[in-house]
Amino acid sequence: MPLRSAPPRALLRRSIAALALVAASIVALAPTRARADAQLAGDPPKKVREPGPLEKGFVGEVAWRPALGIFSQGPVPEMRLHVALGGAIGTRMRLSMAPNVSIYLDRPKASGIGVDLLWTVYPVKRFYVRFGAGAISSVPHLREDRIGKPGYGGLIGLGYEWHMKKKANFGCGVDVDVRALKDGTTRTTVISGVHFAFY
Image 1: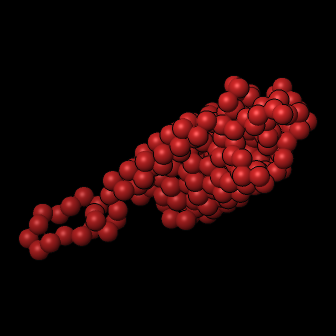
Image 2: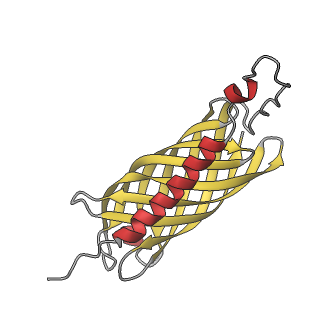
Image 3: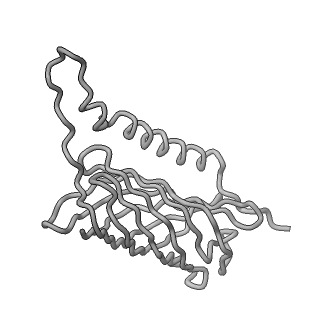
């Protein structure tokens, strides 16, 4: 009977813990408007935090990124396409619904479609931290599988955006995506690449 190809738990824990620690540190250390505005009597004026990079209203994003599915026998090459549609909540936060397609380059029949709810925060300038939760229709159970099974979970990511034009940004980042199958097996995918955001 073949052994299951569960991803190394140590790698999974380290990947998620590292990104979560960095994300939490950045959000915690970023000055809030309340701290910037708070002053004690007699203190010199403190610098007020500048507005974030967003404007209230519609926000769209298109991303086409290479990815690697992590298995104990080796990685599986993928491509991940998502189109996120949502809106800005203030100048430093946006919430989006992101339909996506995962294409397994060496096994097209295992490719799947999904949808994630994405929460993106800009704690420092155009540097962002991203969290997502959702489902995907097909994730390989074993590395040698030619078909996939539904998976549920989410992602955490970091990145930076550069301003291109008045209503467009170019971004680059990395996400760690973790999905659980019905039997409790988890699959980890590392996604990195670029995206374009429109406001």
